[in-house]
Length: 277
Image 1: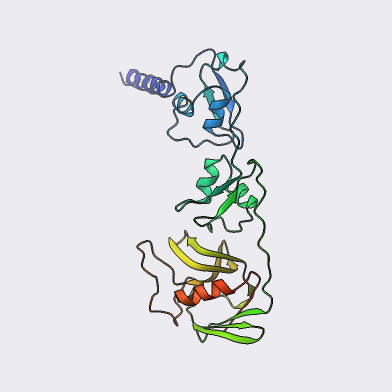
Image 2: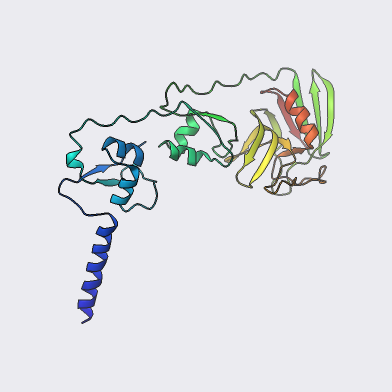
């Protein structure tokens, strides 16, 4: 009796699995997903909708991967027809609030690495709303032109022991501001650096923070440390407000909002940044 029940259960599971992917037909074919393929593109190739492909293969999401085998239902009557042309990829994509590089890459059938490489992104987590990304393989999609690196006679000196920043142009002191550097265990690293990038409103996915007037200066593992205004929490409040002059940050150099805006407008890429004790 026990074995009969087990056989019935196995049969039910098999029948359930076949029901999930629809009825197989003699004219079905099976295709192997290639890099860059999406359900939409494969469906267009065989005259099917992406919804029909999902149903035929029992998929619960549109995410597929290279090497995956998909069933093309009733493809024997379609394969001989000329393939439907795949719509071209756009040349660029403008990042929207809440976007991640991973989600953008999936949308266009790309890998995160390919998208980051095409746009010269050292840190895939550091993208921002309004940023324009080149889409590899898109129509007339040249990589974004690199910003000119200048810097000239500009110099920024960060003194960790004083929790102070001194800004010079041609040896002349322009501004002297109170700052906050990294808290114990996350200290800002002393050294000779330069301004690597400028982003008016950067986003730190690691801590879900907006960072106004971002100036990237050096890499700490996979993350970049920089100079920016007091960060903004998801509820709109300023983090560390009232704590300037005390080491409280996660490694970045923190300024007041007005001071950060002034520095951002003045500084050029390549400006020397010296951090000392």
